[in-house]
Image (cartoon, rainbow, N blue to C red; front, side):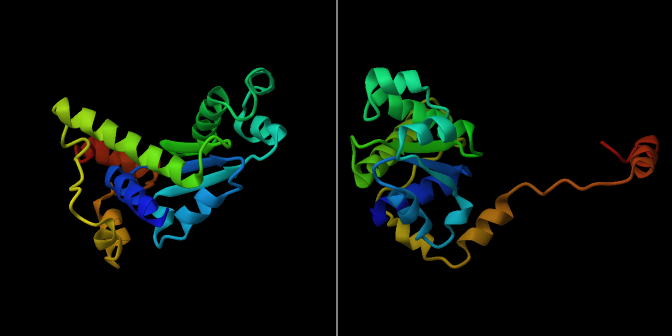
Length: 178
């Protein structure tokens, strides 16, 4: 599971995306494995442990009718859990488990799906948008770099700054504001 988390971390960091988890029967094991990695706060946003049907509805917005008609351990419910995790977080990627898969299977499936998306973008000529990872390189090599989180931060856009209205107006009048 740890190797899958490391690969997933590399994929998420490379895109600047965040992950959310929605777990039922695994009780937070996926989130725990993710947060065991140093620097996970750069790519792991939050985890929802929704063991009961009520928790699935309250925390993720899963329709109780969907749970009653398909059962808590069903594909429609897990899809609703993923959707709810994305809606109720700042993450761009989510994984959900209801009992159909083990935590390892869920993470492997998510890593495989992300790799497929990156491959489609690459075939569409958008390599710069989603570069393909070198499969021969061990993710531990990148993750072992103590400067990795700082390198990511150095690549981020600078934060905006707040200036007084009269300064903005003055800059605009003098042609310095763009």
